[in-house]
Amino acid sequence: MNQNPFGKLFSLAEVKDQSQRWREKGERIVFTNGVFDLLHPGHVLYLQEAAALGDRLIVGLNSDRSAKLLNKGPERPIQDEQARATILAALSMVDAVVLFEEETPLHLIESIQPDTLVKGGDYSIEQIVGADLVLGNGGQVKQLQFVPGYSTTNIEQKIRNSG
Image 1: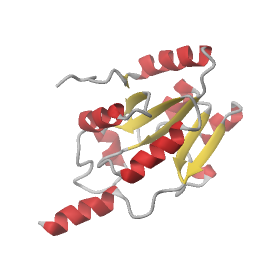
Image 2: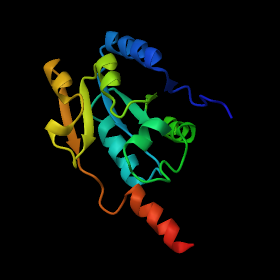
Image 3: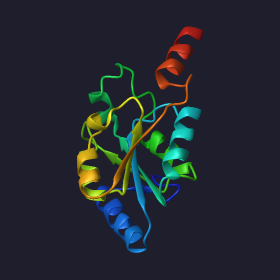
Image 4: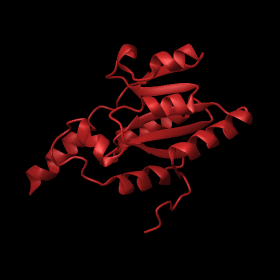
């Protein structure tokens, strides 16, 4: 399988350079992150809303190792990082996907310096990693509400219970 079929999968150094090129063109960069394990309508609507807050959307994707650090369960992530990255890269609203190995995307946020940092509404501003950095640089931090009825955990349970 082509490791970058949509041309949107970037290393940290590549996404930092690409961010700079977009910024030089006057484009506003939005950053969000997550595991995005079993992509569902809630994820898609969240990413669409995030993308609408700027000109370019960069998604920091927890690597398999990083996702395990989040303690979402022994079987998670269900899909490996390459599968999750490929699916995200296929979405038209996503401009770049970059994997990160750490528990949080702080190093990515420091490198990219997004204009807008986006997280789900289940996080307070104080809990959003990198919020202080983005706000300190004159950027904004947005909390988006989740679409009710959709979660990877619920989908996982439904699959397990139907077998």
